[in-house]
Amino acid sequence: MSREQFQECIEECLACVKACNHCFNACLGEENVNMMAECIRLDRECADICSYAADAMSRNSPFAQEICSLCAQICEACGNECKKHDHDHCQKCAKACLRCAEVCRKMVT
Image 1 (cartoon, one colour):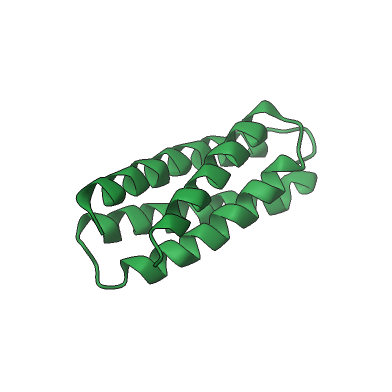
Image 2 (image 1 turned 135 degrees about the vertical axis):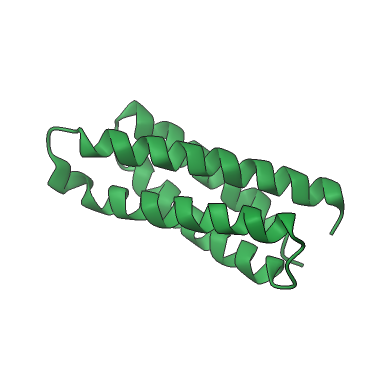
C-alpha cells in the first residue's frame, strides 16, 4: 500500500469517527430514543472500528487489510441504518460511513 492510500483511508476513518460520535450523541437527545437504539449501537461500533483501523494503518499493522475489510462492513451497516432516519445528523453520518466503507474497500487487495 502506498502512503497516500493509507493517508486517505486514515482521514476518512477519522472523519467517520467524528460523524458517528456526533450522531450517537444527537440520537441520545432525540424524543424517541428507543427508536434510535440500533442507530446508537452501530454508531458506537463504527466509531470504535474506524478509530482502531486508523491506528492500525498509521503503524503499518500487518493486519491492516483485514481490519479495513471489517471496518468497511461495519461502516456500511452503520450507514445503511443511519439512512433510515430523517435527522440531519443521521444523514450526515450515513454519508461519512458509506464514504469510509468505499475507501476502506480499496485498501483490501
